[in-house]
Amino acid sequence: MEKIPSDIKAFVNTSPWWRTSFPTEVVCSGDGVGDLIKRVKSESRRPFYVLDSSLRDQEAFIPLFGRTPAFIFDASASEPRTEDVDRLVDLIGSETGQPDLIVAAGGGSTMDLAKAAAICTANPGPSSGYQGYDMELNKGLDIWVVPTLNGTGAEITPIAVLRGPEKKLGINNKYVGPAVAFIDPQLSAGARRYNRFFTLMDCYFHHYEITKSKTSSGEALADASKGLTLARDPLSQKIDGYDDAKAIKAAMASVLGGSSSIGGRVGAAHALSYGLSNSSPTLPHSVAVTISMLALEDIYPDGYADTLKFLESNEMHVPRASDYGIGEKDIEKMTKTALGMEKLWQSCFGVNWREKATPDFVRSAYIKITGK
Ligand SMILES: [Zn+2]
Image (tube, helix red, strand yellow):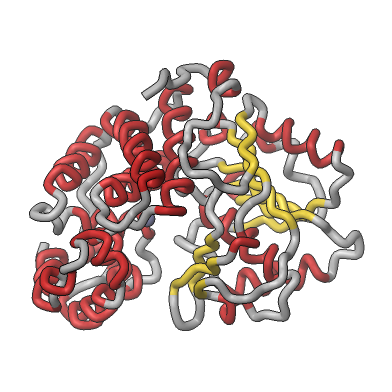
């Protein structure tokens, strides 16, 4: 791999480090908020801001708070709900200034909320009707993002994950992808240790599962293997204190998480995680995948060992399903949900996946998960 920049000055001049092409313009910046504001002005845009409430007390974001119109989102729940999206769409629609752009500053949930609202401004809604794949939808407002947590890949992907009245499912549509992403690794400095750690863990799992996938494209495999190296390094050290070198690696791994997901597909740990998520609305996605990976030692031995190592080096306790109220009573329902993730099992096991991902196999994984 080419040299990884260790300071922000070098990062700003980093040429594209991904192989998969994607339509989002990536702006590497040492002053992400300032560059965003300059660009809004120079293009005479009429932005509507969607800001994560946890940024309010951080100095770097002072220039954004106080700008109007804006919606301040409490992103402490694991995913935005479709009703949050519908409420935001109403707010944007009632703006007399007719916004032509949504700017999101925050982590994956805040970006997903803004992405979903942007497309819904041009479609009658409600947003829960658009959860799914490749529907014919009109293009909504442009989306610019300023990620403040690295690892979600949401700054690149044409997906907005939402928790709806019936299911947790993304709006998957090309018009949901951000037009511009301002990547400034320093903006993650104020993130909580727990969020920083588990978000990068999910990034690691994405890269790991794609590198093991039997159905992913060559470009996706190349991006994932680079992303895996980049994510592994900061996770192996203590991730709590901020430093430029670690934050740059995490930011680069995150963009690769977005690019590798275009031609790549995750596998068994994600398949199991969806069963867990469906059984507990408070269980964060990244924690669900961690719990799942720890039940898959036989399939993913090095992923299992890495996961334990990362938890240990960061002094995180090993998460358990029971911490989130998941137990034996949920096993049958979770088994059914996970077995429905056919493409993920195919990605993991290849053409003969049905012989391996049997109801017994999946059930025994959940017995292991709930028995701990
Ligand atoms: Zn994930």
